[in-house]
Image (cartoon, rainbow over all chains, first blue to last red; front, side, top):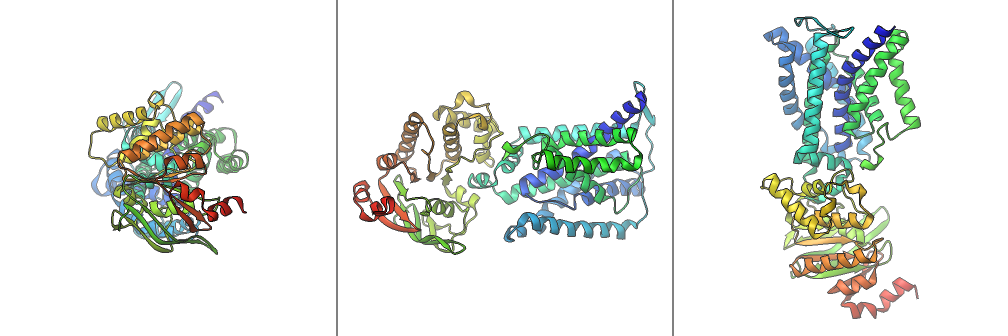
Length: 293
Length: 237
């Protein structure tokens, strides 16, 4: 039992690192744009398919797909923002309309992935040497460990960007007050496009890590990650990227420890229990950032 | 056209309510124009239209002869309009220094130079010692000073000050008055909203009185003090 709990903790941390990235990118988007990106899961799985194609077609190892996915998704995210989002401001309820719009985008992207890769489940048949590493009494697969290391590196880089660079500070300022930043001469659309591109790049990288950590994915796997992302965002506090990072790890730990004590099929219930419990008991999220606005 | 900032027949409606009904306001270079009126008179709406946060339903706004009626808020800021709010909209969980760096995001200067300018501005507002604190740790009055410092980082030609003295300690009010006088002396035009008539009488070269979205009186302090329309709007007699 003791070993099972340690395994659960190790897996929880690793999976939590992935969930943290899903959450932080969604949170950044919501914070800066006030857009609920229902298609975020498809962006993530798109990254998994990038890793898959690069490996199948060009023999590139999955880790090499990380920078490729980051650059490609950033480059796609920028024009996608201008195509999709500014028009929402003309509606009477941009947040609700964003949900519907991005739900449509989610369906369109799923269908596109289905068209390109069919409904079969895919996996990357790549093994690292050694295949696993002993951390005390716990054996962790090298792929998972590397994925976790990349997730930590990306999180640290993101935190550095948000807290140490002028553009990062502007993004945080926009999360705190969109009106104030505009009257200070900051082009909110340019900043929002940066947020959208950055969140897309993070989603692409996360997708590559998903392909490393989880055994299989298909064109419809995106919805699962979107829902996990929403739970993490609510748990971390709406529009609070750093809260989302911590919440992602907590969620991963809770989910993986649940598989130790509960039947496997009940693990997803833990996520929804956390979501409902947080909304009812602490709607501002665990990291209470009401003051952030 | 004589004013640096001019509004002509400005109209703004919210549903069935006309918040601004043909308002003409002009502010010359280095002039302080006070805007007074009871709650709901349209004072803040006027500022929101000038800085681009609200889009007017009619009329025109000119800055230095250039039409800015439908320009985006960031473009208006680039042209030289700065703004503060009645409830300060500082970036609460950012340091005071970082608050001042946001307006100069696109400045063609190295970071150390921008930080030096920000520190100098904080020193002017007597906030330098608190530069690494989060803005939310400041008192309400200090937040108003921080917002003023942040606005000045772009060296605006015209500043719109919305109730800068509301809820502020008298000592801090006196300091703010000195700062506003210094801005005007340096050639910055000021459009000032305040319910504090003593301060507005002291600072203003000219006063515009609004009531229900219309200008009911305009002139120097003596003209406003003696205006029957202003007395009626304020006292209802």
